[in-house]
Length: 268
Image (cartoon, rainbow, N blue to C red):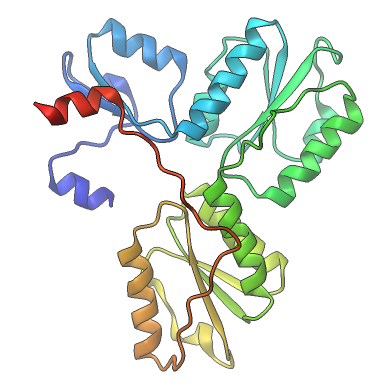
């Protein structure tokens, strides 16, 4: 997908310093810190905000907690771009934990005035363990009214749990830097299957399938369907005889509105 966008003229950058003054910038679905937003406004960049609404929900939760002077614990993976953006919603009063062991080492100012939020693409099972550890150590900690983990991530993890009970091997189509795709591979392995993360059919290796009767295929939440079908077609070329598409536990019917600024541009 990145290559397709580059071919259409999109330029991918890691920092606003790489963007000329007055240019157009699109914030990715992972979201950005308040400092990045301020800098973009200061430099009069034309901004289209493509932050996922589910990530925006977490940012708003952080803002509300900090407005009430409540410190906030973020459950997430250090260095992940979404985590950096969420931590950047406040200049102070934020803590990052990844494991129950991190919780044991956590020191906060006021254990009675504490809340937690989560990265949206985590493993539900791993996150539940961290939440349990937080509640055990900080009984008065407050959590989100509704689960922060992305519904698409949840659905795929549930589906992989079912898939792994029937397949000796599960292929996850997705990028190596995709948090939710990596979590799917981990879930498959936790439920007894061998899991491999592949970018597409070019990454498949014949030796993986020796003595394997059933292979499962799934994909990260943002993986283009063409890559998934490419993997399925390659398996067919290599001898897969019966290809079934299994229904997920939940039908995904959520849609997000086009940002108003983008809609206005499209109308002109």
